[in-house]
Image (cartoon, rainbow, N blue to C red; front, side, top):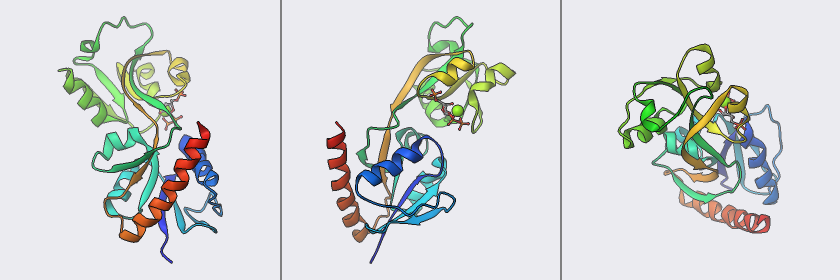
Length: 212
Ligand code: PRP
Ligand code: MG
């Protein structure tokens, strides 16, 4: 029998909640966290543990049929990928922040400034919409350290509890978007895949209703 292939985050904040929602759907997965692939015993599903940032491309290429991923990642690199369901967990913001000591007036203050980020498209679109031109410095993690080591004037990154900003003496000054985990669908999903997706969605919807 054909299995639906789902990508979930390999490690990080989404991983646990993604596995939990599958579990709440009555889907048991034989884990093996060190294995990059796992199967369910009681639902025709195969799990691929992947890096967040790679998931949009895997969906696009049809290597996986569906994924649990942050909406923020789709906005950054997967605007062509459709969302079947919002999942209500892993809520966060993608925000611009500056050192606490900086007096901040408006988004115009970013003109000509150096911003460190892992979300270049999101920042560029946001600043373009405000008519502001900044110099983006792309790094893939530990972004909040950049102003402290003289690498940038400001940062753009995910804000969840706000503790990373706080610990690095930064303050949030612009919220560019809010995000939560979503169920995303490959544009290449087959007819059989779509039928399995509908079964899974039915279960997810009842889990989400029960969580309310
Ligand atoms: C993420 C994100 C922020 C932080 C936000 O980083 O990049 O830095 O979490 O969460 P908070 O507001 O609750 O502090 P993560 O710890 O996943 O590490 P990374 O940036 O090195 O990938
Ligand atoms: Mg971080």
